Structure formats: structure tokens, C-alpha cells
Length: 220
Length: 384
Image (cartoon, rainbow over all chains, first blue to last red; front, side):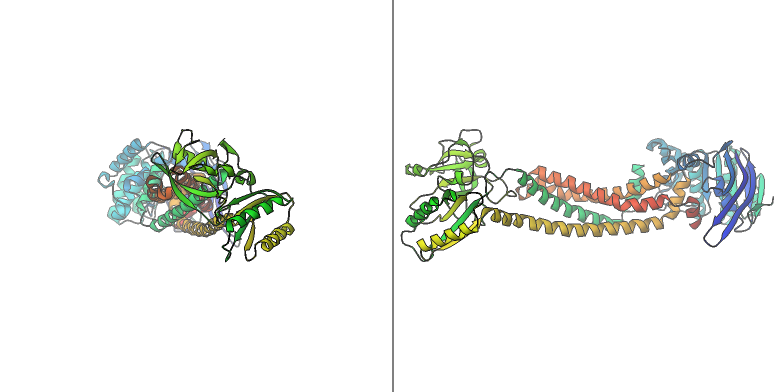
């Protein structure tokens, strides 16, 4: 599903050069639930950004469904992100001026989906995460766990093949974190491929495979 | 996407209220200025109706001399006609073309009333200022003997009084008989509204109507002006003589219209520049504050150009909200026929104001929106 070959990512400023990823080779299979662990600054989020086509590697190739996408242009990358990948972030990234329903609809806006079916799909996604009764609420009126569930609904509304979750339980207490993990596991059981960055060993143990990074290098 | 943008802006209406007021105020000022410009341009495009090249107005004042003034005025007319440099002479009231004076009165025919500018002239007026008579003829000095005074009216007065009827021979206000019709007569210059006008034959025995219009040969200069002033002064002791070139008087009249328009244009430009700078600043700040959102939208499938379009779309929606409020005010002008200006002029001014506002907000949004599209999604999401 996702194949990374000899990935290297270097951040350069005028005075310093930082090697964020060094010779990463990974193959994520369809239907896998993979977790990435490692200390802060080891390159976990950078790796997730490269997989999610949000960042270009300095070297190496990224393949999605066997197609090399490294040379794709902005428009093609945006289309792939929209149709194949769902993102979940630690800090939820909800737009506070939009209702829960409007937030969840956003990925479908970029597919030029019409209003009525768009709302229906968004409501379906919210029902899956147990928030069908909060559609008219604004993010400020929700708890942290509810916000993350809205973010999950937004990630799955477009029915993507891959879900990339960057510390999805990082801002939540353990009960809420477990709730979110249960939803992710359910999505994986339903066929979604999930790659999750986490600091939590307990959460990582619930996934199929663990990848460990240290100073930008894959150690496990 | 449009509905999404409307929802986004509507939900942020409190935060945007000052911006909306600013755009609304700019729209109203632009609407006023555009109305002023459109009115004047429309007037300017209508023909003046007469010729002013090489025409001089000689204003005479008898001052303390009250003896046989009418006869003396006729002698001056004869004297002016005798000059080789003078092609034509006409005696008329003091409201000569491009002068600051104005005479107007209501006239009536079959219960139809119009308010017309009145001019008292002799039979040579049309020849002196080159007015073509479209229907009938210009009156002659000999026509003053009948019961009714002969008059010539312009097309506007004809439409107001007679509609489609033939005006020739018709008596108006029980004292005037129409002998001719001319097209336009815009005495205050090209920017004047084409109003009803009525020309009445001057009576030779009247001591007033003491302005002489003379058409001089091309190339006649100030030396001749000095000569006629000196000659008249020597003929009529104690009289004052003042000569105006109609070309200069026309410029003065134009300035009376153009100077306020130019001042309004400058003030409006400064206002719009301020609004534009304000908008530019607010948009820059807004984009800086919304880097996380931009990163998120890129992650969810927006292209760089999609981000540019979104921010331009947002400012258009904001401008639309402001102008919808402005339209509620502006539309009252044509509906209530304010200042008796044609509805078409107000509608044109509204369209101009709408286009200029959209143009300004687009220009202000272009650079910040372009900057927003260049934000790297991974960096923006990490900052949040």
C-alpha cells in the first residue's frame, strides 16, 4: 500500500543542516495497523508527513499502491491526499468557526461533492464515531475526546484507504485515549490501513506492528 | 464551496463587523462619487447646441445715466455692427451663455407646466451663436408688433409642453406665441443638464437687457477689445463696459463643476487607499493566524491555488455582505427619485461602485492569498 525506499529528509537553514530521516525503508501492507514510536525529535512526524505526501523527501522514493508519487505535481498530490489518505492530529485541528458537521464535510468539499450527499456522508461518519447528536455544536463546546472523534470522522468521511494518525491520544486522558483507540481498531477491522505515531507503549501494543525510530534511523 | 465560504464568514461576522462597516462606507462614498461622475459625463455627451468660438459678451451698465438708455443701447448695437472685425451683433439679457446669471420662469400650455430658463434676445442671436433652428424660424426684430410675443423654445420645452403636437403658432402662458424650435441650449456649458429653455424677443424700447454678444472674425485680438471699450466709453460717458470671451467664461463654468468633482475624487481615493491598506493588513494578519487551518486544508486535499481561491473567495463574500447592506441604502435613491436624477444613472453608479469594490478587495487579497498558498502544510501543522 505504502512503500518507502531509501528515504532521507534533511532540513537546511543557512547555518545548520539537520538529518531528520536517514535511509528509511518501509512497506506498509493493506489492512495493517502499524505504530511508530521513538523519542521526541527522532523524526516520527516527519516520517508520517512524508507518507502522507505533506512533505517531500530529500532522497528516496515513495510509492502509493505501487505508483511512485515523489515527482507528482501539487494538484495530483492534493487529489491523492484527498481521496486515499485520512489525517488525524494530536491537536485535532478543527476549525473553531465551523460546526462539527461543517468540519467533517471539508474533505468532501475538495471533491466538489454536492451539498445534500455531502451532509449525509458527514452525518454517517459522525454516527460511526458516536457523535450524531453533536452535529450543530461548535468545537469549543466539545471535550477533548469528542474533538478527536470529530477529527476521526473527518478523516474517514471520504472513505480513504489509509489513515495516518499523529499521536491521536496524546492530548487525552487514558479513558478517552482508550475510547479513541477502540474506534481506530474498529476502523482497522473494517479494512482501513492505519499508521499511528504514539509515545504510549500500551497503545502501540494494540497494533499489528511496531516501528521504532532513533535519530531519524529505523531501529526496529 | 461557496456555501462553505458563506458559512465561514457568517459564523465570523462579529470578528469581521468593522471590516464590513469599512467596506460598506467605501461603497456608499463610491456610489455618491460615481453618481456625480455619471451625471456629469451623461450631460457632457449631449450637444451644447450653440457655438462660442470668437464670441464676446459686452456687459454694459449705464450706472447713474437714466436718460434715454434704450435708445443709447440701440446706438451701441449700430456702432458695433459698423466694425469690420465684427461679423454679427446681438442684444440680450444679462444671462448670456456661460455667465453666472440665470433667469427662469414657469410656462404653461393646456395645463402642462414646465419650468424653463428664459433668455431675452434680438433677432440676430441665433446667427451670432450659431444655433440651427430645427422647426419654424428664429424671430425677427420686426415680429414684436403682434398681440403675443414671438418665442423660440428648445426641444426639452417642446416635449414638456406639447409632446408630439406641432408647437408652431401655439400660444403659451397667454402671452407667447411659438415661432421656432431649436435642439439643445446648455447655457452653462457641456456639464449642464439639458433643461427647457425659452427665447423671447427683446423690445428695443426697453432700457434693460444691456448685454451685447458679438461674433468677431477669427484672429481678432485684445487690441480690438480695447478699441471697442474705448469707443463705447467715449460714446456713453459714465457707463461701464466689461468684455468676456465666451471661451474663458466656458472654462470658468467647467471649473465650477469639475473642481468639486476632482476634490471628491481625491478625498475618495485617499479613503479607498486607506481601506485597501487596512484590508491588506487584516488579511495578512488573518493568514498568519490561520496557518494551522491552511496546513489542514492542504492535508485534506486543497491545492495551493485552491488556498488562493479560498482567501479571495472569503474577501469577496465579506465584500458582498457589506455591499448588500449598502445596496439597501443605495437602491432608495432611484426608488424615491432623489435629486430628480434618472434611475439609470443611479443603477450605473451602483454597478461602478460594486465593480470598484470587488476590484479593490481582489487586489488587496491577491498577495496575502498567494503567500498563504505557499505555506508548507507539514510546517504549518507542526506549528499548531
